[in-house]
Image (tube, rainbow, N blue to C red; front, side):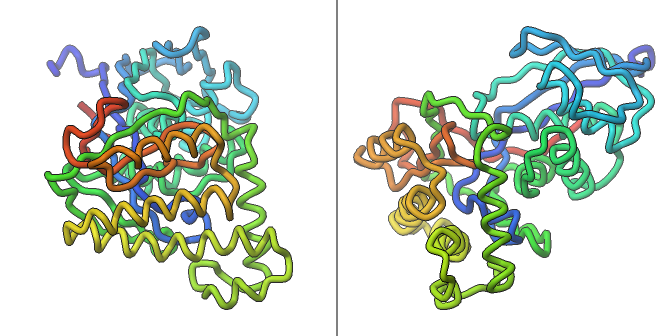
Length: 335
């Protein structure tokens, strides 16, 4: 960038795929995501009193006046992600620009990538954890989705060639190399979903209700879960407790090259997300069954919150001719 272009900025924020560990982050559990080599890019000119942004995915432009006090009221709805970040940062200086994306919507955290990219455009100078925490608050405030911190933290703190095992209570990140002799493939189910209108918030509330009775689910045993009288709360808690165990087993298996075991943990995770947590769908189940029937596919599961969206598969390289393979990417950055 030349001196004359000092007011221009370009940022990139990757999407993320979660290999295993869903609906565990907001109870302080374990997750195993990675940033991917697809994402969201914002090009813009810094300055002005607005966030004046067009998107290659949206018909209506964002035109958000700063400062923002009620990001949840901003229209169009996609602009609330920009507005929420600006509100949390107390931004007074905006930008005019364009958002481009090569992420399919649903399951790969396109909204969190947009939030993190916006924070960088607004010159957030904090650590990846600082950015992730701010963007998580922005999501809560602007959309009402009570998400955990996994998406934002993975996108902000991604490490090239590595997945991240994250303890969402201690906010500790353990990078785990992704071996070259396996391929991570994402296939969209074709079923669109919106977390704002889903039962995501209800699932979190059910986990909190279980915790009120037996304490933190990240510390609970299956015996303690079995003591819950409410069958629904028992099922929700059982998923979280067993999913945390699966994350640890999966991480060890991947590092050891035991892909059959890693794949089994993915399949078990998907079953639990369907039967105990009830966030899978007929379309997701059918896609997982189809993928795991292919020789060379070790395992597959829904990725993200469920209710539609994408499936992730672990396979021998070149096995699948559908979807797209992804590589573990570095985190969000100014270009």
